[in-house]
Length: 242
Image (cartoon, rainbow, N blue to C red):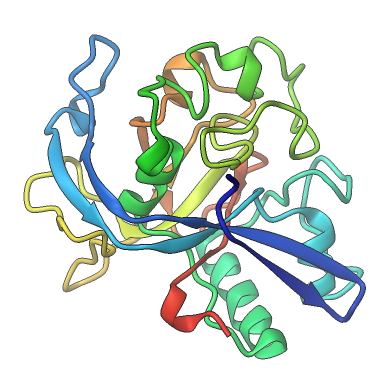
């Protein structure tokens, strides 16, 4: 049985899907031999229900919200993920999207993202989002030929989410912390009292090796940074869903 889905329309011209991620407890982080130091403090997190975009935000959706001539992407194509957007750009998009839809779309938290990438309550313990074979679920340095690809061409993970390993990194709401010491255990975003410049990115990108596309792998970059492998995915709390 497929999880409940929200279909949101914009201007009656374009729509996007969000899939319900049923909440639960999971072990966040990894102690596998490939794990980097910043992911090795494995800890249990209880994640509430939330909705997550079936795909990364596409260029078509970006243009529908931000204006038809506004497309910062290096690799152009309506069905490709939007890229060359900063964390701050993503928040400007969210502000306009919420005005259009009367919803409260947001970026996922780091624990929400990892929980969903792992398959949530349906997790089969894969290394990547949906498989132990990255080529089946993601675009990375061995198969991308140096560019993004349209979303949804590979297999989804256990929850029906696409492109969570590879293609583009995805901005996360959380501030960057170099390890999980003191991290929230309730699924909320980890925000510093004095917010620094670096934010979390997840999932790896088209130019990364397989190690960087694992579901537990973490990355960071400045909130104003824009790269041709930087995109994002929408989240929505059930209490905010209209």
